[in-house]
Amino acid sequence: MELPGFLYGFYERRLLRSLDHQKIPRHVGVMVDGNRRWARQFNAPTSEGHQAGADKIHEFLGWCQELGVKVVTLYMLSTDNMSRSGEELDLLMGIIANTMDRLDENEDISVHAMGAPELLPDYLAERLNKLTARTPVHEKIHVNVAVGYGGRREIVDAVRELLQEAAAKGRNMSEVADELSVDDISRFLYTRGQPDPDLVIRTSGEQRLSGFLMWQSAYSEFYFCEALWPAFRKVDFLRALRDYAGRQRRFGS
Image (cartoon, rainbow, N blue to C red; front, side):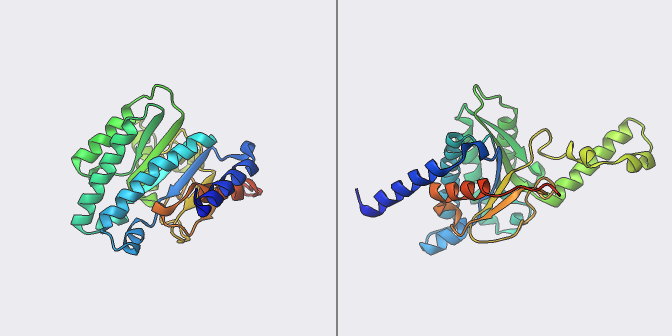
C-alpha cells in the first residue's frame, strides 16, 4: 500500500471515530459545483467533468446512507444554467437522465424531482416523473433532485398554488392576505412535508447561495469546501459533518 493511501485511510477512520453520531444532520443539501473547472484542470471535455460529477453523486449517497443521513437535496441544474450552450445542455441532460436511471436501480432510495419540468426535454421530465412516482422497497434515504430549479421560482410557484387553491374554494383574496402565514407558503414548496436542510454544502470554493433552497435554508448551517465536486472525498464530507456537529445552532434566538 502506498504511503499517501495509507495516511488517507488512517485520517478517514480517525475522522469517522471522532464524529458524534447523535449530531448527524437529518437533511443535507449539496450544491454540486465545479464539474467544468475540474474538466479544465485535466484539459478534458466539459462532458467528462459532468460525468465525473454524476459518478460522485452515487458515491456521496453511499456515504450518506452509511452515516445515517435521511434526506439529501442535490442542486444539479439551475434555471440559470439553462442559458448555457445547446451542445453542453444536451450532453448534461443526457448525463442527468442516465443518473436517474442508476438511481432507479437502487431499491433503497426514493426520489423527488424539484424544478420546472417544462424547461426540460420530454425524456428527462418523464424519467423524473417516473422516479417520483416510484415507491422504494426499503427506503433508507430520500433524494430530492433539483433539475431546472430556481429558488425564487419555487417561492413564486408556491404562492401561485396557494392563491389558486384559495380561489377554487371561493375565498376572498383580502381575507387570504390578512391570514397568510409562513406555514401557509411552506406547505406549497417543492419540499412540502419534508424537514428543512440542517446542513448545506457547496463545493468549488464559491460562497453564495445561488438561489438554492432560499426559503428552506433560513436556519441551515453552511459549509463551503474548496474541492471541486468530482474531487470531493469522503474526508471532505466527514470534515463538514464534524464542523456541523461542533456548531451551536440558533433558530432566531
